[in-house]
Length: 77
Image 1 (cartoon, rainbow, N blue to C red):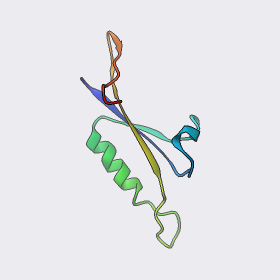
Image 2 (image 1 turned 135 degrees about the vertical axis):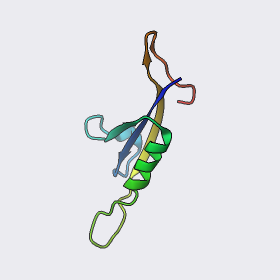
Image 3 (image 1 turned 90 degrees about the vertical axis):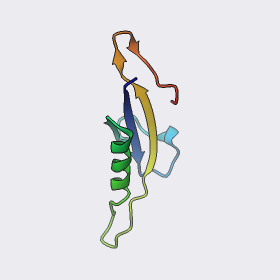
Image 4 (image 1 turned 60 degrees about the vertical axis):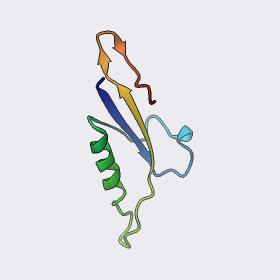
């Protein structure tokens, strides 16, 4: 099964249930490795000239792609 690897992230200190659908970034990747590379890159971003890292909160989801039979959800979701 082909999967799409989603990454949600935010700097909000609240729980992911409080994230806003319209403002919380979401990115899609073709591989788990690409998604992990993006997470690693985001962890290197600094928020000020003192070099303090931005404290992102990550949430990942793996979903099956749309097929002729409809959307198939991967078993590990």
